[in-house]
Length: 310
Image (cartoon, rainbow, N blue to C red; front, top):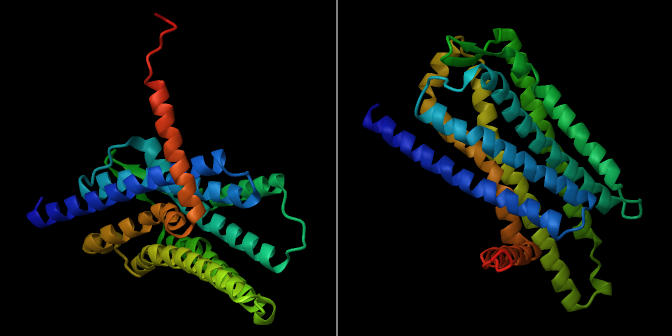
């Protein structure tokens, strides 16, 4: 390994490790807060599924990206994992995309139809089950198509035409459709809330409070939408560019450095949401402090000597 490749491998390993170190504790903390301190509302059920989906991406993508993309080109994880890994990774990506769509539609319905009865928990769980089934079924071809060659090389054995059709389909399903749904929903929500304010019936203090509330909402939805869009777009663009190459191995070999950066950017989306919640939502910051205090108290209690058995 040359010094340049060694430096690149160390750099990308460090960045991926940082993402993993942020994604796992961050999403676990979100899950704990939602389960322990929040009512299991419809929105919280969706947010819980989003955190679980982010953890799936972090656990199944980042460690293997570090090993396979940076240190050894030889597949060392066996035939079963060769068949399942791409499927699980793709399912995680689809879960995140579909769950964000569901959240945006749920927010849209709440704002535009406030008098309509809220969705029940069982229907929210039904929606989550449908999201999982759609995610798994759309990525199930990867189980069949992933092939282990000579116990050292794991590749997707597509025909060129089928590969092109499937890649375009997944680009639409995993990226363009979800992003369009989120943008339309959130833009309409912001416009609706912005236009609701009538200065003649509110005091200056009320207007200031509502302005801050609008600004916080606008900042949140733009941040979530932009970060998701920017993180995922380069990966899909690279896949589309590769379709024009007859020799796919040559393409990925020539674009290795770019792909490592794009892959790291894509998986880094798994750590964004906890950071966004913490930076923008004061209630979340307060619950994080409560959770930390609870863990410290539990740790101190567990470390006390047990005199009953002496």
